[in-house]
Length: 174
Image 1: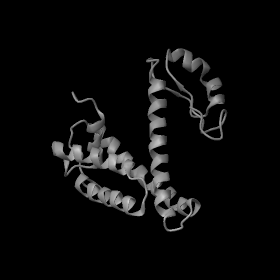
Image 2: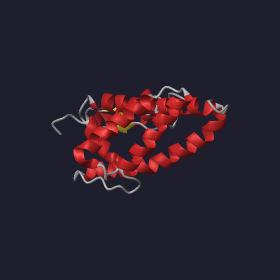
Image 3: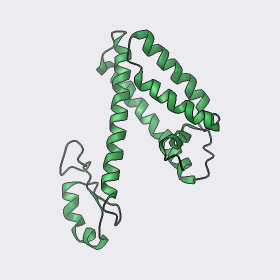
């Protein structure tokens, strides 16, 4: 995975899987390609899983940013004017994801609503759908999120945190 500014930077990452002794032997050389080079274990498929998962995160985030830009453009606000607020919000989202990751990894299925319940998120999401449609902005992305959230709420998670939505992405048998 190469991130700007590209190969050889501190922010570039090479995900490695295989024999750990081989990784350790060549680690310093691999880190020349990417300062964030990381050993992921012996499963050779793991780097691809990380790569595709991070790409999904990128596209989801970029699509949400672009949807937001389309909304503010209806009030003659440019993307660059909106950008500092988007960056500020992305920083705030990091705290949510840290809490949600801990809740998911706890494995107890409780998902305490430390920030807001799914019911609260759903009402805000309905507002986003309504405003998007009222402004003539494509609402397909927030409608997808609304349907996903409603499905998880209908499974009994209305009072849980947003982390409970992970259940909708898992296989039905889980």
